[in-house]
Image 1 (cartoon, rainbow, N blue to C red):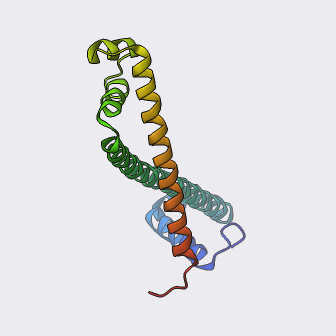
Image 2: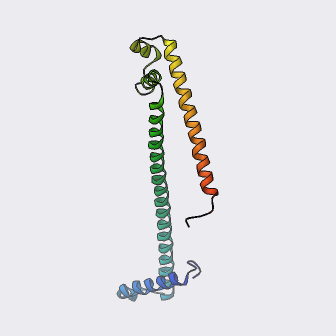
Image 3: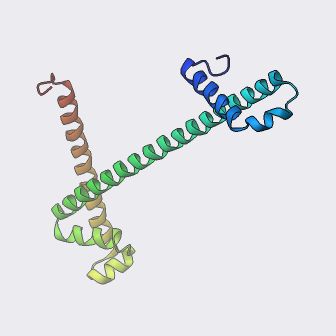
Length: 163
């Protein structure tokens, strides 16, 4: 009880000691001091139990950490997919030339000069289209995030109508 501080566990340890004594009863003939033998057997059994509990706690902690990581990765993946979907919706709303410049610059990673050559316009025109497209996307995301935040705040401030 001094080491494990739980009566149920202490009883289990005593039971394990009895089983060990029974299993090794033939070798007890060679024991000089039964009191010392029982003390050492008890101490070692308690230490084994404590070590086992420490390992189990460590494993549970590691499992919990892994589950949290997995959960966070799944959530991150879901948010990434939602953001990609939202980005594609925004890109679809861009004027055709801005959309084309934006896609060439960001998805195909072409330089301003390469885009200008491909579209047969000046580099400054490419730069301007890209600047307008990015500004539109930033504004859209900003307003979308504000709208989403407002909806979430309203939902959390409503009384629990459904529960």
